[in-house]
Length: 354
Image 1 (cartoon, rainbow, N blue to C red):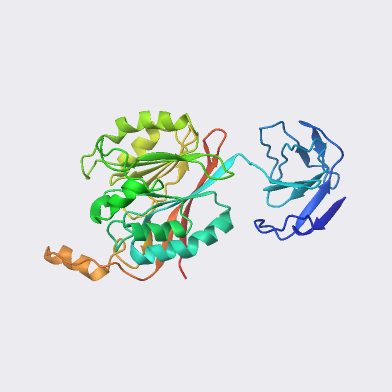
Image 2: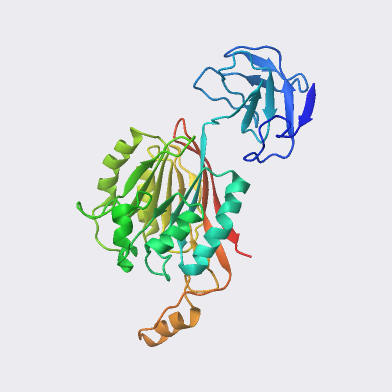
């Protein structure tokens, strides 16, 4: 039969468990690889898979355990198993990545610090990546603004053409392994353009940062630089996320089509305008042409409106201060199968800071 128990009743404290109520289903003795039937719901079956595979069964999953005769299964949003005197988190063979579009100034940093913890809980996010190149007063990034972003729960920071706007960025490039600059800068440039990360108790993932060349600085060609780097990353993980920082939509789309099936996701940044073309290509690569930006949207791309208008009207220099109103966190949420590296879903994110 089915018995409702709280996490505390199961002896696991419940500190990191989202579900408020657990349902424990007692199973007959079963061995490695057997399929067993849920007596309280004859239409549902659970499989105890051989190590190290993982199993999925429409929001319910069972995993191999050192306990050879598992007799109970705890159901809590498909994340946890309970065996006699044993509780373990399963690997559901998936990685959820939240990517945050260009963070603009203090309003953008505040949105990240407030909303990222909420989004992590709401969507059960494993990894948070953010483009931080405009986080320091709207231009560039410093160790202090990077620290604010990391402290908010961001795991990796990417950048783009505003990388060098603050001279203090050199310290990040030289000393911070979680900080990336575009891979296609010339050989010998400080910093790194891609890296594999190994979170505790989670599968490894890789992040690559690239910059386009159409209407932008003439860096090395990302179309010729990236393939070799992707091959090197794939030797360590199939979960690969690419931030392609570029102006032209055609350049972003063409690159994503070229690497379809070789990386998990390609998401564009730079224009500060979130596009509505999220999709998964035939090879399994998720794509969004631009993630938008995180900061004040009662603005012109994050800046006060009137100075930008005056610049267009008079063609004279103006000071573009960061705006303050209607702050949004924008980006994309990608669900990836870590066995194959293929995306299962992608959705746009646009959350208001209230």
